[in-house]
Length: 283
Image (tube, rainbow, N blue to C red; front, side, top):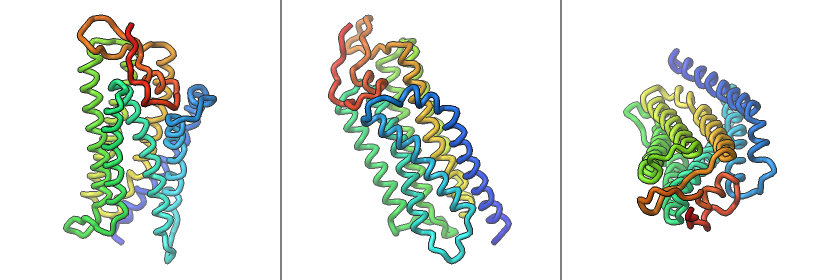
């Protein structure tokens, strides 16, 4: 084993363990927000998705850190690695599910928009699963498998598309509004998508350019970032919701404002029904 490979493996161990420590630290400093804004609420789609995005990454991060420091020798580590990958996928899917609900509510809570977003997200997810599990491998000239790079590239593409949709909705329907909740929904959403896009880009670069031993360097940081940002954004939204009422976009160019859409109200209050209340209340 070369010096470069040894350094890459050690670096992956350090970054994965460090990311796990950050996840634990963030959990303790935000536990009071979780108690305040999620506990005691009805178990519905939003709370179940949040719980998965909040707690599944712990299992994935700890299993990855354990695998990084364990010496497997002649043991078959394939089943363990498959379980780790499953945890990573589930945590990321839950976080992205929360993002889809946000974008759906922000865009007017229309069923057609939800169908398009879910179909797009499902297509990306299934493609990622196929690339990760299929026996067909894409390799660089050195023979190193690049399937993971394509998976992160698809995730990056997904975030960019949702980011563009959010920007379009903001300037098409909410331009000129200075409501605190709108700034929170828009600003925090762009922050989440920008951060995930950046770390996904870094993962693509690391996997594609650096030796194979470096491929796991940003594995746990990726799922930790998903979990931490998704949780914090939800807490921030519900805190702002207590202080503000969001004006939704107008169906005409009239200067009057309208009240919060029922779907957006359900999103902030954590109600289970998020698709059957698309009508806007006239002010």
